[in-house]
Length: 493
Ligand code: NAP
Image (cartoon, rainbow, N blue to C red):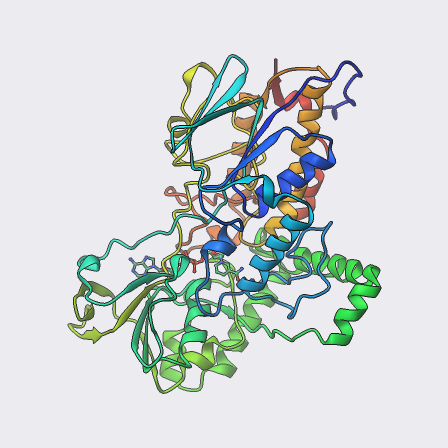
């Protein structure tokens, strides 16, 4: 297979883009389009603010467990990060500041929900919920990965008499201080919210269906001296970013895709040591001990969860939930756990991606139909028969164990190379070739067999058939793939 040649010179074709979503990826797409000399685009955002997941998630304790100097755009480093791992509010402010600085904020059309995208006569026709419409040559779906909350199917959930909050839709009007709080779930969101809330509530009951491995993670503040250094010596910040990126890839991202790797064993050992040294009561320690290997579920990083769950006002409930009643949660042992506020830290509908937007490709083929057995995309970007429709952080990409910002930056660079050929007139329409898609899917399934995700646990990484949905190779391989499109893998017309 040959790498694409540079596009032949010719008259430039006008290109109009529709960007869906003004989160991290949508803002990035707009900035990169401009850098590449494309100015004809519109960003549609269904909410009234930018920020995506960082706008939607505001639960107490929210932070990003990817180091801040990596969790930011490479072209917009931030010397002012307060901590090694920034809070959600700080990250939201960062995206707002970047969008302002690059003049993107004023280009966003807020309160505009895209309902349908239809490919007809070589262009994408866009229909919005308010009845308006638009059209473009390209669609960039920057609609996020973990976006729509998943509500658990627990009998009686709607009968609870007090407020019910999903972590991804926190209502700050609901008082929690001095009240009896129940938290369902033990994922990354639950661990953060429990560690924050336990200090102010009268009682906290954590309903655990499956225990989690937890890596100890300190979160030191950057001193004013360090921040000043980052400001005056940006090369120091760049070096720090490069170091973190390398360490993150070698020590973590590349480890999880090889269940037998020594790095993964080291992570497992560190988690075991954290449990052994942090939890004093042997009975509680055993109830918190997972029966699967560290990294099988998305690893949790926390400096304070074990301390939080050992506080006198905290209780770990491991009896299965049988139902929810007006007064609280009922468990299989017959006990009613009386609560004032119920928190659902039950995760996301992970198979949505661009959906529920109806996307209709060439010859009337519906994306929902193509994805009926689960979402997929060639290199997480393109789906056969959906020409000039590109996803950022689409299905099958590196997710969960990578900085999604780094992923999106690589992807937009790659997409722009495909677009460049259109601008130069080499072809008008481009989408993944069916054969390339099939090969990618088969290779991905095969490679996934040796990842830690398929080593025996339930997690959002697995599709309903138990096959990991995520990129099962190294981050270096992803970087290499994103260097330049192999045009033979694309159908071009
Ligand atoms: P999650 O990892 O999907 O966890 C959902 C939790 O809810 C699990 O413990 C699950 O139990 C439990 N659950 C679901 N339905 C239940 C039911 N019917 N009864 C009892 N328990 C139920 O969701 P999340 O914690 O929101 O995290 C999702 C992802 O978001 C993370 O993996 C991570 O990638 C990202 N995230 C990142 C950060 C960060 O710092 N970067 C912070 C938060 C989230 P089981 O384990 O038994 O299924």
